[in-house]
Image 1 (cartoon, helix red, strand yellow):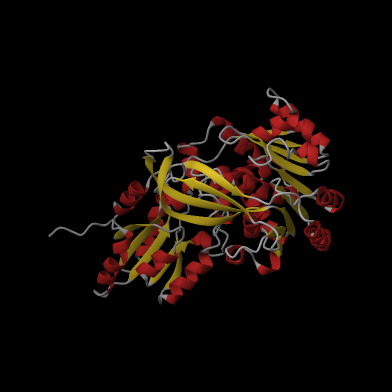
Image 2: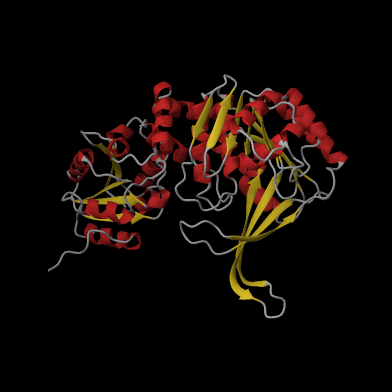
Length: 512
């Protein structure tokens, strides 16, 4: 009689394990990425199996693996089949979730095993171990820590199958010489003590999905069938959400209208303690609606056209006074003020003047878009920015020239703004960083798959602002910003903030 397959779909996992449990077998469960099977894994599985009768190994699906560019090295099928080939392993399943909770609930193990490096929590970069332990207890199981021989898949892959370009390898080696991986991890954990104030335009991003049917017969215009839509918190609100992941005391000063759909979105996006947003029925909430085609997994979103709903004219004087009142209450206590100036009216001359005079540390992101093209230039609107970031279009407009030396213009702009740090983000080409010491660093993109570039620059400046506040080295800040941007381009719009665990895993993998 043939044996049932060792590799099963996640939907069937619970039933398969239940059938084994009914036979009186003691179930042991291990979960991880298992990108490269090595001797450490063999010891881990054998020691785990010795604690019971039946060993289930669940594997994180590749789209949820956050270990840096090029990871996982092997796809879901190969990782699952490699595990199934081991005699100690009885059942394998790929889990379509980012963490182990759902897998534990499906398996309901008697014993759930983690590596010995997790015993003191130092190995728990994700911060998910407490949730795992609670879930194991909820299903009636116990924790165990096994693995008398410890190896690192990341280090082995880096040594034997390094997917990084020579330039990225050298960039990471330079960082490792002065900031080892664990030192970087400690630095990121210490962001939690920072008091950050975000000031800027809240933008709601609405993605309306349509299926293109073709051209109409009479007017020769594109016709599409409406499939659905989602409205997301963007602009300064997206930046606030990124920052709260690392610095929970972050606060946001902004303005929105009283449209009925606004408040429910704010409630799901803001922590009450951080909410310093002005609501005014005479103000039009900024909404940018993009019509897009259905998204295929791993493919970039195809945007067809956009409609913007914007406030006409200047910010009403009454609202400006209220913005200034809230800034006077918040700025003195802030370790860093991050200005997100999208040119939509909140950052009036008086508001900008106050921030430049009073902020202890001022980080500025002054963006160009279709509504303010050539009118919202950082060197025209600001004379002080302790740190800043801009893209290729913005630096060309600031320079007033089509042909420029990026290094020369970046350093010139930084001196004009009396900056300590400056960055030029060039999308799929590179990110160039500058510091007051006259040093330049260059980091190539870390994303292998781009789904949507909306919000990538916002994610970069969020992490950069935290690094500046902690006075981290230029190359370390640049790496963290690049990792945030790489994670952001894998997300449609601003569906969710970047993940601290993902950025830490990526950094530790690159620097291992």
